[in-house]
Amino acid sequence: MSLLRRGWLIQSVAILLLTLSTGIAAAQQTSTQKPNAGDESAKIVETLERQAAAWNRGDILEFMETYWKDDRLTFSGSGQTMRGWQATLERYQKNYPKEKMGKLHFDEISCELLSPDAALVLGDWHLDNAGEKKDGNFSLVLRKLDGRWLIIHDHSSTKTDEK
Image (cartoon, rainbow, N blue to C red; front, side, top):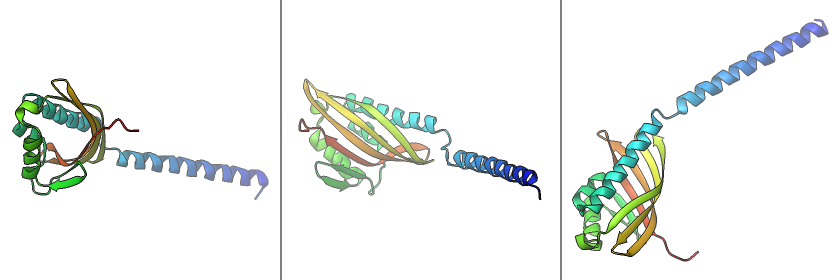
């Protein structure tokens, strides 16, 4: 085989391999993209907005509607983890009677869809009770159960001035 034909053959094979690898990479990227990721993230943020609105009305039971009503729900804070929806409700009721609930808002929210029905959400919370302010951050794991995004794990902590 002449040197010219061999060079042409090598170039043709290289172009074919490049074309195939580009197609495979594009197919892999398409298959791993999360369908409607933006729509689902927006639904999750709406869930948190409903949660804050319920809190701000002093409606702790509606606030708790965003949590998985199951004994396997986990809530971590103040150096301990509790299990169960009822225990979480009782914790909120004990620590935040209606007159001490104040106004709650969230910001710096980021949603990472882990699968079509699971998400990790990070953000900051701010609570103002008649001028007494508390701030903290949270990491939530949500699952889409029966078409609704529900918190199955909440880890919330209070920010301190220490750096």
